[in-house]
Length: 210
Image (cartoon, rainbow, N blue to C red; front, side, top):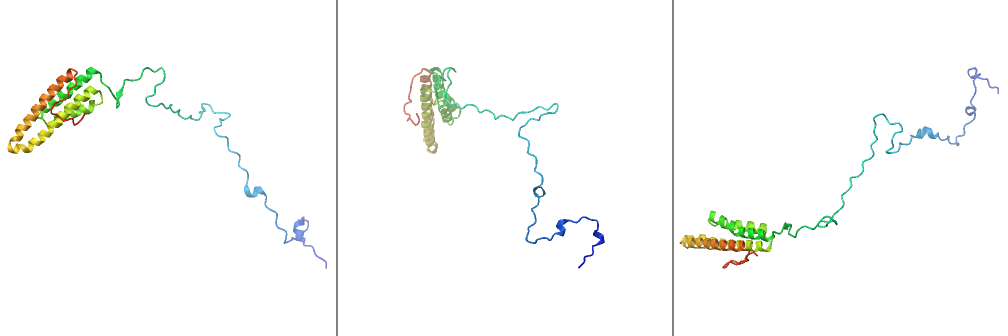
């Protein structure tokens, strides 16, 4: 059988693959890697790199260094060559010298005495308590006189509390003024003994604090 060529395709080259018979069992070739993944991106510039050609007026700033931590120093430790240690202290308070202890031992009796007179015996306890709390750790001498003053005021306060209900039968007025008079005398004696630098314990007074 004679095949008549098609005049439309005359003079055009024919693709040998198109003329060959395709084998259905042969798989198609894989696509090119560049068509799937694309072009490889350029590597990133190195960190903290200074440009080769800096712009005019540009100053390169180095990375900030961490702030140096101060060296740990234990409390109370003294480096060699820094002088002599501080004077002895008690509970963080400096101990008074003997002259100051005598002075505040006298004030421990004078201050509650004045408060007692001005308030009819009601605020003397407050004065003794304040002196005792502030100066009980500043020396043995001032501590003893402050404790004696506070014991006098505690005993006086007990008698005054008993005297209030007894005022209904008129006996409380007598006990009230007798308690204030005794406390007045004891504070005078205590102030004189403290000023002379002598230890003293008030009579007829229990030791509630020491």
